[in-house]
Length: 452
Ligand code: NDP
Image (cartoon, rainbow, N blue to C red; front, side, top):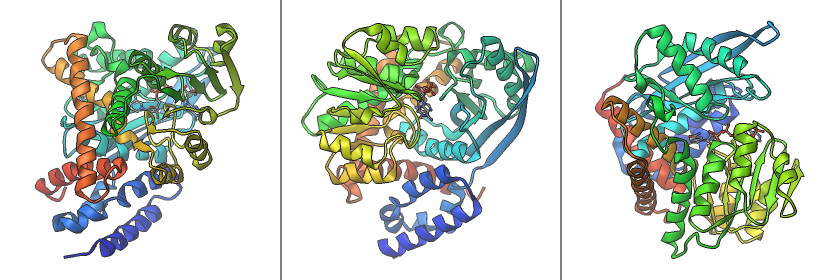
């Protein structure tokens, strides 16, 4: 039997080799490192997981597609962007994961997101594999017509790689209901098929599930509530800091408010707003979703309770809870130290990998309940899988039924992570619990299906 320390050494060598074979992909290295460093207890305890090649296969995407996306802007100039789809692992079901449109998107970012997605999707228990995609296209400041032409060009290549039984994209940063509509329209036109299950996050009138837009934010708050419950506490009366002002942030603020907490911040890449009366969601949505404006406009229009801090970070605002909901590595060690100094009790990741490894370590050392994104933000993909089920059955469930399922799934994920961490000698460590529980499900399926 291999010991834990021998296993750790083997995993460390593996990581070095993965870094060597995938140069200049720091986000991918970080995501793989975060998973591999927690797997030693389970690999040491179950010899079948030490089988040569299993973890190497898990860290190598099944397929990676990179393509040119040419389109014309409103002045008639030709623009060229790069499109990506990484189909990472289909042992548990069709590849599933969002599309991100943001200038920072490159292959390493898409691979980090796809890798995370494998474990997240496994944790939902819903039979979906892991994938991710996107483009370095920046929708900010583009007209609807430009966004439409871009989406049509993007889908003109992507359509040949996806399908309801193959690969099912959804939204992510920069891809919301508008973009999913344009993408779905072009897919339908090219294929001449009504294949609703090929994309999720659709509009409710044409195959979308109710509660899908809300699901990631709502699910994250449910996960935070479950972590607090485990410690005999609850959300009522708590102050929360939330970063971002997009889909995840808005619905996080909505659910926090509904459960009696006070969400006092939101942000975008220009800075943050703090509103001591609590964020007024109607105003925020008007500015961000209708006018597609910036958060400084919120402070201007809200009055005395709110102020805008240009270039600042929400983590300097004292709070009981922190819910990062913007992007990767947005909460570093200094931010974590400030939150701990101000008495934060729980941190729950709405975004993917928003907390740097040093910051995670600091929270864990300080005894702060820390919910990693692959567990805490799994509500979005879970309801996407429910949307696929509704599409397959040509039916549409009432909102109450979807929300009930979401609540059950988030509580199950919490219990699974909590119990798994305890079983492997890391009580209260949701990072270890999520990684091991997700890994076990995928690894078991891969072993059963042979070397492919
Ligand atoms: P949106 O595009 O709706 O919103 C993103 C928000 O984050 C915006 O406020 C944006 O500000 C801010 N942001 C993005 N990039 C940066 C950056 N580099 N620096 C500072 N701020 C930034 O995206 P979502 O809300 O859908 O996604 C947010 C996070 O949640 C992402 O990490 C995503 O992967 C994750 N996630 C999303 C799911 C979903 O269902 N949508 C599911 C699971 C996870 P600005 O407009 O200034 O760029």
